Length: 107
Image (cartoon, rainbow, N blue to C red; front, top):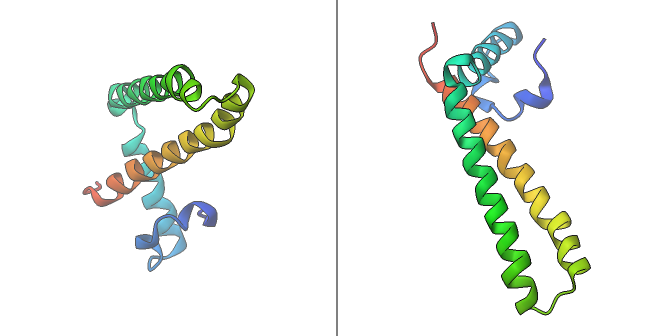
């Protein structure tokens, strides 16, 4: 049976039977994260890593001293704000890839 925690992010599947929901979700995951899209995912992961690194380095090198934050306070802000934001962005990206695969024609 399909995982209801995961299915809540895909309301377009709610009107289908449970077996069909599970089948379509598994097929969409296979399309989105299969070996043929590996290079696209690597590129996206690398770009996102460098953006996060540049933003974090900019915050620590430019913004924290300008705001006269101590290194400890800046590190706490990074852990409490920046890291959870990264996880949220990654989850949205994951769901977006699956949603795009659900909307594409499936065999």
